[in-house]
Length: 126
Image (cartoon, rainbow, N blue to C red; front, side, top):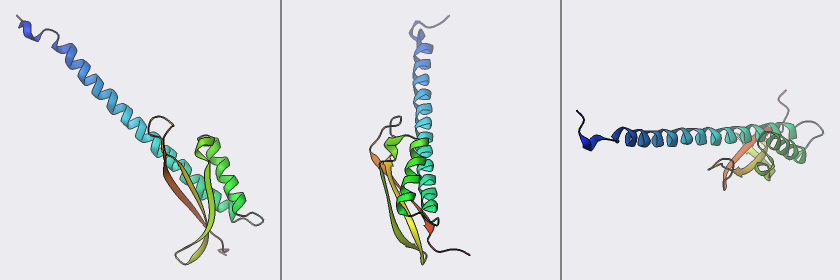
């Protein structure tokens, strides 16, 4: 015989556990999305820097290539703030492509909070 006070407790427990599991799954999906955006933007910045060092290309070509890659993979909202400068890394002159992009907090929207840099040497290696 069941005690009358325990009626409905299984439904309440299921609801609480289900809500906790849904929150956990959404948090993992959000983290995966943020990491995907960061990796994609970092890769595009590095590829843009390598492209800028090609013979006949320059910083403007690197910026254009970076924007093209980011726009193709993530959308134009992530490629708005791209810049190129020269920098010295470990005593080697490099071209630096810097990208400031929104870090997705809820879905694919969020404030500017992600800044990555890609470098490629200006000198020939060989």
